[in-house]
Length: 285
Image 1 (spheres, one colour):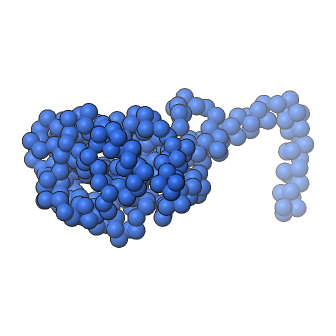
Image 2: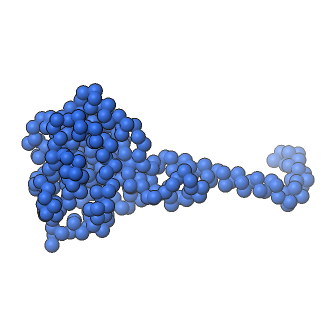
């Protein structure tokens, strides 16, 4: 019974395997050219869960294996034919040979472990990645106010939200060559076409998740292969949405003021307002 709890929780609050796999395809542009250029296409997924990412890696021709501590999740992955083990992520990484993996990934694992362990994870990932290899870490986005103050804590195994600038600094500090923040899973919201952004939009329509993609230094052709993916923009930022909200509020205030100035009553009372201004000046008010 206990083994099924997290499986049921994921189904209800994170989504079906099919939905998650659709979302994970956003990372393919980072990987596509590396597969063609790399003689060794092995990958490890930390906290692999039901195996959505393992399925995509296999589809793309990558020799992938996963580790997790939840037997209920691992049973689902095994039934799909994936190579998975019940092992702790950092210990598993430490047992891998140096420069042996093209990809090290962890989807919604960073928020479950102490920060000191996260530091070790990033360092071990750098060691086991081959030159030009990628580290991918995805986590809830606390820039979304509803996520940061409410939905993050739905999961009792979550520790602390991780601001994007903090998580992106880790691989930068420990020696990765390129680091990109991807904001992900924002609600369907054509911000450029919306002329009535509400306060609720600002609070809830920033991207629900984000990821950092970090690349280990490698040959020029490997670094160039990911260039377009690293330059692209992803997701909805809080700052942009809040600025648009402020601009629309200012515009509405200006429209209201203009309507007052152009109104019949404003023109009729203009002489009285002029007299009152003079009286205030005369009496020092």
